[in-house]
Image (tube, rainbow, N blue to C red):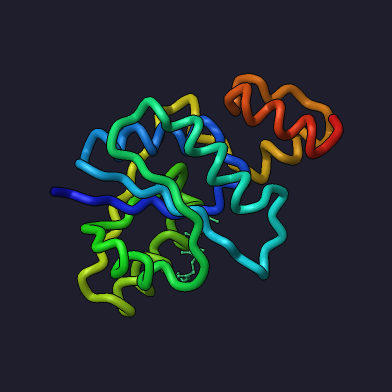
Length: 159
Ligand code: PNS
């Protein structure tokens, strides 16, 4: 029974994240999508909203559970008895940060392996930060996030 843990801020989830979720779910029996509560980073959506969006958008994928977490990822990894952590890798620019995180996590928990998945090419440039910025400025995000998120961004930003 392989259990993968996919942590992130998902503020909000976009098609790139969903692409990684589908790829990861295909590789394991159970996939936990873990939404981080980070008090030092101001998020647009609450953790409850982010968990709810992801739950709705992954309802058709078997073996996926979604939860919020606070604190260290390694503690959740141990608590969930996961086999590995999944992260999406979009570009070389992601690499340094991801590499640091993977090594720090492994230094905290020797059994923690990080597996990197590359989203499909048409999703590779997506980031939640850019999606929010474009939405805030009234740009078209219809091809970058699911309709549920488009609506939520419209409501939240009044755009
Ligand atoms: O989507 P993000 O913002 O790149 O996700 C980053 C996240 C949430 C995976 C990372 O910040 C994290 O693991 N936070 C939990 C706190 C922690 O364990 N920090 C040390 C990791 S090196």
